[in-house]
Length: 199
Image (cartoon, helix red, strand yellow):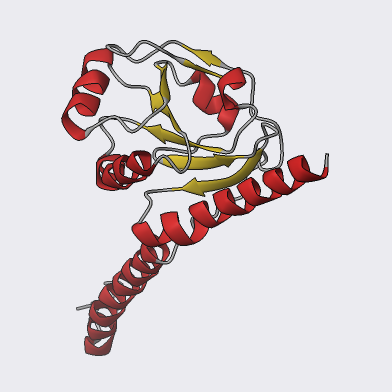
């Protein structure tokens, strides 16, 4: 070897070992952060629609149903509006809760069927049950945009004056339904009754 030849590069043993330890540690940290965000998400996402009137909309009925859904159907009483789709797995998981609630008659439940092929929407309701007082077919997602829908499922509590009182993003559990949504429903019904009594 002469002075003009480049010196041989030797890899330091510590460098390789450090690299092998850091890469998996970084990957694990990113995975842990992702998992934490997935399971600790706050489903009370801010909504510009809360405490504002229900948007103006008019939807045709879901295939096989007689009545669609419009803004006027939601005025004059406290109700729930559930945005769902047959292709939505969480919607299927929460649906038995709506069927059970619908059977009690405690609060009208309205549905917005979001971006669903008509035949699939009808088959889904026929198979799982139809707890809805009325259902509108939002085939192009336009009404969903007006409502500020991030994705399905979403459920709204509508006050008797036609304003959106509460919004829940994501699938409902029995606990969320009973201790959050129905608590809001009962408070709204109670305040509506008190206002009527004083008039």
